[in-house]
Image (cartoon, rainbow over all chains, first blue to last red; front, side, top):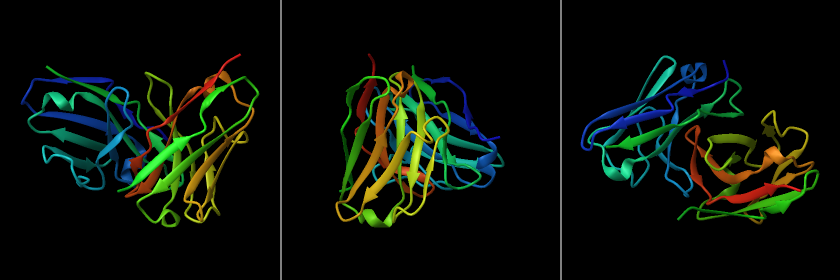
Length: 108
Length: 117
């Protein structure tokens, strides 16, 4: 398969932990990158590789991967974490990118 | 500071052409693959095209192959997307992005392309 799939929507209570998952065959060979996008803004990379946060990303964000599934976990979700989250990775050729459909995270 | 600034978007009729530019600064542009990604407002991200660091290798998504051409000028630190035979369904915000860590690690602010008669 050359697709990545995510749940369309997830909600979490303020201060609680939420996991967003992404599935696809390409994840057996490539790590997922996770993007956060708020309304009217460009995407921002929040996680890459095995479990790496770009500079400036809070440590409440963490990542993991097993088999064909990658996960982004937010421990102690904050109101400002409400956003769309997209996973992406290379496809099997290594020359194309795949994007999942995105997960809308609501912080209650 | 890494910066990517897109330009060239606008309103064009179906069948028309447009060239997008992405000016890069704050990093060694010639050392990185680059991508174009588009997003219909309210919808998800869709990969459009990739170019390697010296421009010798390019790849395209199925929906734009044969109509769009990605290129770069490393002397000008600029990435381009030539879009021909535009269709209504090409209407989207177009982002350029830098490839690193098997991800797109930096994104421009996007430029809106609207294809309509």
